[in-house]
Image 1 (tube, rainbow, N blue to C red):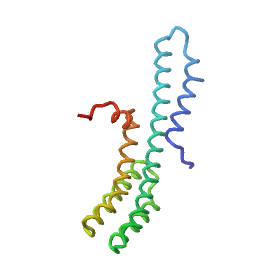
Image 2: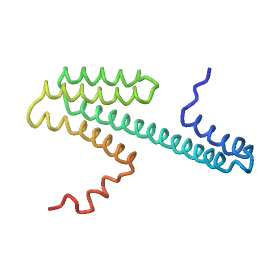
Image 3: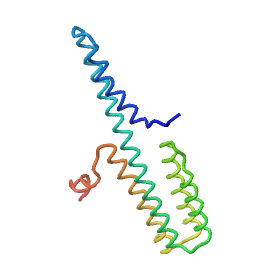
Image 4: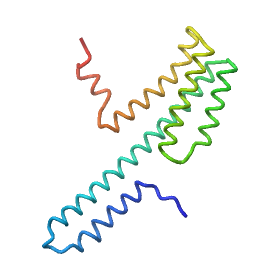
Length: 162
């Protein structure tokens, strides 16, 4: 059985509702016609939200992989290197589900940060943590975009300047 992406199914169902179901409703059923159109619009909106979330998780995974590469370059410590290798292997075998992938990304970041805290200290630890913080910034920015907020716009409106 082929896998159908949820956003594709919602978009197709929305199109079917507008092109086939709504025209079949009698003219004197204005309320039902309106509700059918509203349902189709809601389905289209949900499809776009799912697609945006998948893009956000893809962006997070790319940022985490870049952060892991930077951590590996920054640290020569065997324990940290082993943790990075384990995390990369887990990412390579990531589950298909969007929620599961996102949880894996967060767990992987936690594991690497914990290894850095355990095995490094001082300036070396700060330098090694920075790429992981960049990953977390990417995650936060993606979540703000999903909420319809622009982080740069909020910073530039003067709200935090005093």
